Image (cartoon, rainbow, N blue to C red; front, top):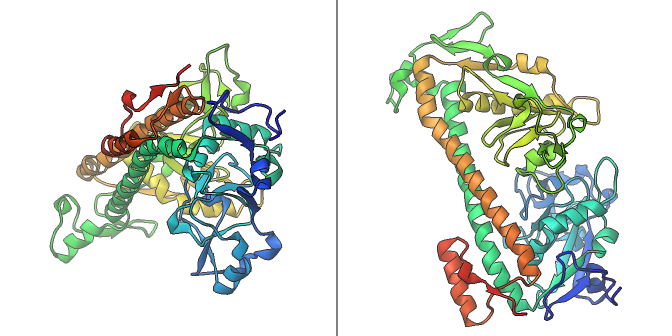
Length: 466
């Protein structure tokens, strides 16, 4: 064991000009700092206000970024009192429970926010480290596997400073760190662009779906005789009230969710182990939330019933724990229990997908009210949730307008999966010195080429001399 307390680097042998040290050694050398969030007694839910300084919870820590949804806030007095937990650009934030292998790199937009009780912050000396480089290292498949393997807890992984301090950190000269970031960030920039585009497409599709099939805006415009919008002429010009008191366009009908779609529950896949080298990765709630399988995903026999095999583009609904409706784009996998694969032989995907999402808030409310450790819904709740089913002409125009938006989102997600795979394949080779990036004047040309092409080019790399 070296003086830095390292047995061996996680990436294998490193180039001779690179150094290796544990986070503990870096902290003792005053070039790194770990900070656990405030104790629960220091930050009560009663302190939260409608507006103020955001407080980051574990659920906000996504893949190398913070989600700005469902944030809580504290006022100025609490912010000042908790100033030592403030975040700065370049901080790397971990969650202490659950998906402990995820981390978020703090940006300038999030400077001044507060880390919550279940977060651990890593802050590095920026004269020695490029934080984006370090975040790539800590988010690589090899390091994620190390963190999960060393995390504590039988039912839910948990992370603490003692575990993080043992992580062996490789660090090349700062110029090389920046050069590596110039290559890898091109992949992440395109992935982020895809994510933002998909968020816009999703907002458009959901808004159109709600306008046409929930609020009946075209029908109301027809009834009012006002200026028409495209496709309004295909909608009725009258609303009627059915026997249950529901308002409905003339000629439409109402059906429960479990009549417009089939909700196939997954299997207890521990009963279906891999068969030799043949297997399917298991898709659980964890995989659905992160959008992909990884080396820490379980494996199952490929010879399970076809209805429990997931394919790219399938609609999936987690009905237990963390309720979520999404389009799976993480490759062929085996559907675990607590997940529904949603299909229909009669109705198009966009229709049953958005009707399921439409009822998600209510399903989450039902699950939250369950007096159990893991809230869930039952099939009876699917039967009690209704969908407005239009005439054939309106269904056809919905398919013509909304379905392409969904297909574009799926294709964009699939592209992001490929880009992430390329990035994660390159990283360990760069870390092991199998590939090197230029750091002199040619590095500026590299950065320009990366920004222009957003693509991998073999000429970016040179073999490490023997």
